[in-house]
Length: 393
Image (cartoon, rainbow, N blue to C red; front, side, top):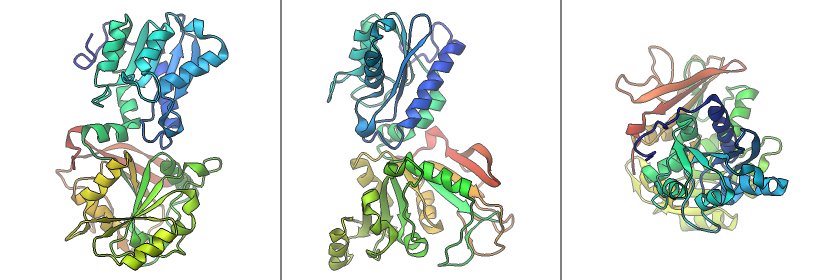
């Protein structure tokens, strides 16, 4: 069966199939933000009589892959023989090419599984159906499309990088209940509660890099690190848009360079001495072309793509958010709306004065609300663009 053409298996997926694939998706989430430069994938190995044998996920640095990790775990248990005739559930099509280790399709063939179920086709040109075909030729029943939506959400960065040649960009925006991001221009205003802040730190741990603007750094003086207990080593690369190199070495982002790399995007005419001072602090300075609106955003994302950063989190003010939004480069928006009202202040993205709300999307917007809820009183809304609308650079 050609999974790329027919998304329905010859036999419908069972409830047990769904349970095992959902478990694989949960293990894939453990690798988010840690598997760079490879995608965060989960794998579950089940015996012929439907007993869980082993689980795995892409490890830090991208190796071993999820399938290899699960098979190694099974080998350590001394129970590899139990997998004969069993099933492997994987969130992404197994790779077909050898790299720093054997292809995952070959490892699965050698393991003795008689069935492989994967959630999402791998669009990487080195795979793109070759893993599926290799398994089929080897006599393995292959089915795909199970829990595809859930797995795709977890693989959004990887899929965007392969399909659209750019990273997947999520913007996190926090506002008051009446749509303001601060009480006054140039003033830091705490809005959301502690639960929401934990949620944001978790978001940071799951991306390759955070983007922000120099105004946010000068006003809020943030670290932009993940400071959750036991996950302090999960901080992503931090990238600051700073056209004229106003960043100072005593800022928190510069003082916490040991927590994670720091990159500054500036324009081609920025002061060379300022660059030298920052580089002495271990900060990487990247000069990019500039247009009428500031640093060329497409050039910035192309630089990120060349570094294999596939998942980005934008934590910035309204101006930089509006620039990315207007360029059609924001794929997902996470809006945290606090309980307090400011009545006046700095408006958030797409502020509507008549309704006193931010994110008042125009009628023809392609953003769809995919989730809403509460975080200890703060309102959480998640908006995502339609698949067909994702823009290349």
